[in-house]
Image 1 (cartoon, rainbow, N blue to C red):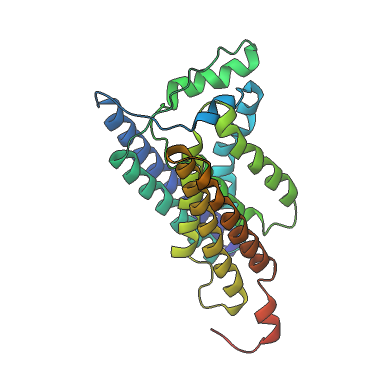
Image 2: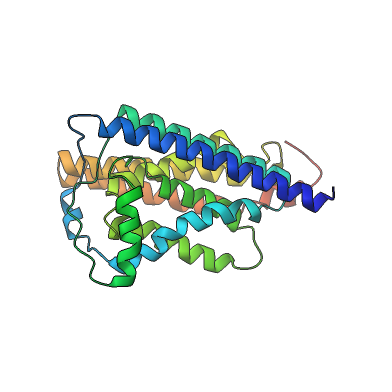
Length: 268
């Protein structure tokens, strides 16, 4: 068996494993939530202003395609291994929260008149439950997908734009509330910290530091909105701290190879 054939078999195995675990966890959590007498929801008041955009179902449904493509986009076995562990981590961790803190989507979904767009919405209604909300696996997956797609030489910009639209679509298709998005981002960044890429490679040390700043930023954004919801406008001051954390994280990520260039012969 050639190296290429072996790699494809490993990629197919990783995809199959993650798919089976996802289906098992998702369906178990759906069954549990549907068996409860009442499942609460959590929304911020300003979410009522978010418009329902039927066309956004297209990037939303693309998550399933990316779920398959990302495994075959890995450049080497180590990247595939890290991707697989991160996917399994967020699926299982999200499932634990789906059971401990079950939430449902609470906005009534408007009727879709376009016959073409109506098909995927009918599919969602049949197979995608209103439960399993927070953290959003669509968002957690999108971050993890980008950790692989960003290293591609071709289609990198396409994937970046599409993943941004995918993130927005979780709100505009009326599938998730904002708290689900925030917790999904937090979960993804925790996976980057717990399961780092090339832990002992000095070249990636700044990138690992960036993940801590990004995680702090998402937590501060969540804290700011929760304080705003329960206390008032004073809580929004945390948004400034969140922006600082995200900016520092971006700066670390941009300069991830700086130490490696200065000390090329030393290893962590």
